[in-house]
Length: 283
Length: 283
Image (cartoon, rainbow over all chains, first blue to last red; front, side, top):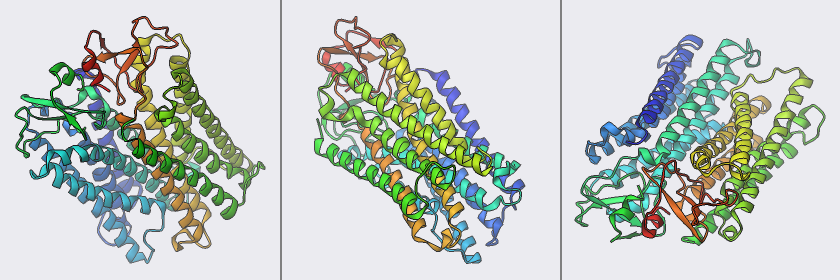
């Protein structure tokens, strides 16, 4: 792997910043707020930021870069797809529970639902994330989707995944803003109370985590290499996604369960017969 | 251009949604808020969202995709770089004025500066945006930077540009959230007053605009083609950025002012001597 040390440094940084975000959100609710519980009150509300940051930010971020870990390149693509889907499923479940916590809290207090921009964007993100998960499962994990369909959907899948990740981070930053303006009355947010400074720092950590994941996932040199014994189908006209090209079994009649998308990229049109040098150069 | 109609449809949608965002922010401050002025009060504060949305979101978004307009592909790269830099400079100036408006407003009202997460992220974004502009000008627009330096910096430039664009959108959404919780007291934000619903819609429009720009700029088939008479220097090991490969004059001794980065991508290492088919396949 080219730039292995650089990759490792960035991965460790991402994990560190991600862990720190989770610790910060826990300290926020356990030390500065009322703690955690499932009572329909503030303790239940506090699960909302904890689960959003842990599941919807941290675990989603790891799910995005899981194909890029070089020590997994010897694992089958099916296993890696399952891990990718599994992590995203865990993230989705935590995100849904985090939404349930807020709805419960609102119900008990008779506060209307869905009035803020944070709630509009957040609920849309959860719904689209679940849709992305279901479509990804049907098209890429189950063995029945034809390769042509996978090739058409893959660039959209990659794009939607990154867009949703960014949107979730924006939603969390809105949520932090909303909560601090709500909660910090005496002393007020604008008098720089420790909770304000601490939670602003949490927001920065989440942003830095997103930036690290975005860098790691967009470096072509850190892409999972195509499987041995596969050839590249070269996109004609460059319809491949951000991440590269499509690889199928060299038999040209792949078992669709094993048909590998060599990376998160895809091609709408494919032409065969390019020499290997030409094919390699797309990697 | 492959998928010209699709490109045109998305471009028109992006322009429409972008214009609509600008109109929405104007209606917000002129109809729902106090209007515009430069008096140190609310009228001056209102320049903050107007200039942030117009300059830092809309004009920055256009600046990002300006290389992708196919009718500009006959224009010299130097002209297009100047337009890209010019639009970003206008965006930076409007962003700076928008920050000045808030600082003025805070000074007159004796409100402390820089206490909110919105302000922390926003000011950081403005500073990094100006740094990106200055470095871009020095390295890509002025003729003196060696091609090797441009090749190293280009992927960072593209990544930083997209990251900053996303961060600015997140900052605007935080700002909208902050302002609505501040301003909507009677009737309260949670009673769904017209201003709340209207400004939430503005937030959604900005998010959709960002999503459209992100799609347009990450489709490899809509990349500006390399100049005629250039050959591709193929990245060895795939260090090219998200956007593709590097093209220099076929003389191999390009005038550095005209040395073209065929797209927003770059290569750290370059090897010569690939046949044309191999080179084309990176496009």
